[in-house]
Length: 121
Image (cartoon, rainbow, N blue to C red; front, top):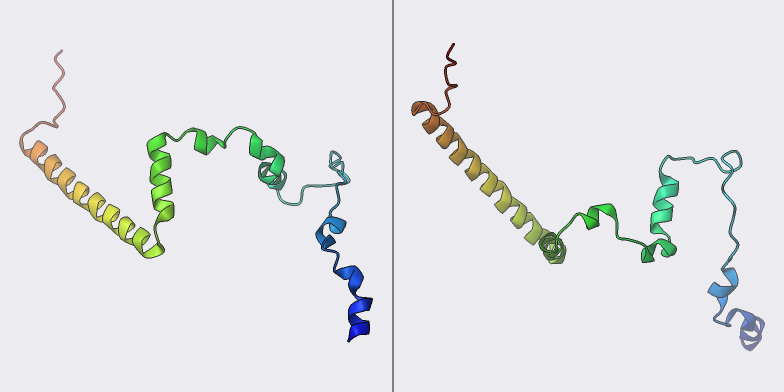
């Protein structure tokens, strides 16, 4: 056993990850040599690279206000069951609003509010 650990001592350097790291940059400018297999993969890979982290935030994030970001963080902190309860509550609210709108539309119809004005010649 002592001979086995002595023979494997070069594996215990702790720099295994560093010796596998390649800093070589491949020039993928030629579409003949490096065709894009799936459209959009190059842009996705560029957006996920560590170099793009220091650039501006994504477009969808730039359009959000502070309240929207807070709401997203709140939803992200919920468990799946809490999130399902929140969705059910929103569905119930949408249903109640639909019923109220239907009542108001019927009321407007009976009061002749929704009729088009007659054009005078």
